[in-house]
Length: 347
Image (tube, rainbow, N blue to C red; front, side):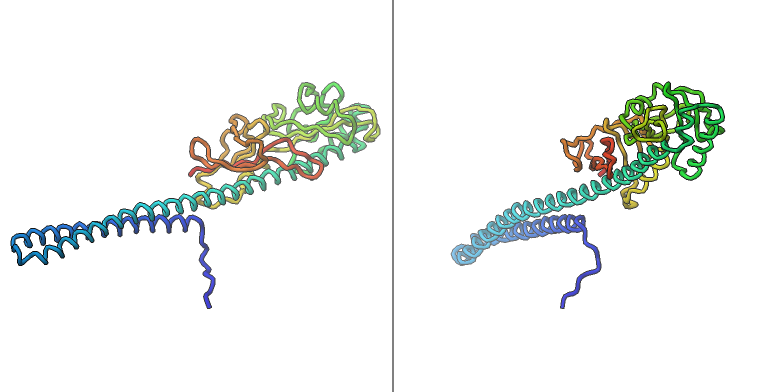
């Protein structure tokens, strides 16, 4: 009974095999042509000798003619073999390469999807956190009555949260004018008293319909957090902590983006040989790189993806690189921000 080999066979093994078959065919055809060339020379020499022998060599001349004719036929067959079989092997090699590209492209697309799904699940939790913490009595009481004691207590409560949730840089409670009245790390970041009225996340949170809604801003750097890269989620703080209460403030939570995102792109399961020639990226809806496994181009470089309105796929770009991508699918109630997981692989 035949046994199944324990050796893993890849499409590249098939490609290598077809290349060897092509080379072997070409080599053997050259050998055949050399033999037929030798036969023609022998036949020519035999004809010369037959003519010298006159009538006595006539029969030998007939044989020499036949040898010459056969050698010509063999050469024709060898040329036909080289052309037809070579063409078939070339077609097989192309099919194998296309198969390898499809398999590799699909694999990298799946890895891109996995990366963007991981960040989606992570950020979904941030949307839950900000809406939950906005209902903390210390938070809404400080927003309703921003006395020094109330704000100090709110800051201490936000600090307790930060001690438990290390993925945040800081949490800010703002009044309706955008002034920060309490923060979780006042000894680290001197944000209290500063205005964030012009920040995108504050403006969005200010316009939310109720406490069940949240706002989110694109990845950016924050001067008040020493220029750190952040993902900010915000919601309205409402009277009595009720979802339908009157808006009395805004809570913004600043996710420590860089180390969390870097862990995801560096954790993409590429082989050792792939890592040196691949970039794993997260890009926003405008193609701006917001995380990169090689650390290059973050918030400065754009990737012009040729998605052709597909959620996921792969293609070869003009630089002969394999580009695989997948759009954020969202997670539960978090629809995502139109980001993509992307892997760029050199050939």
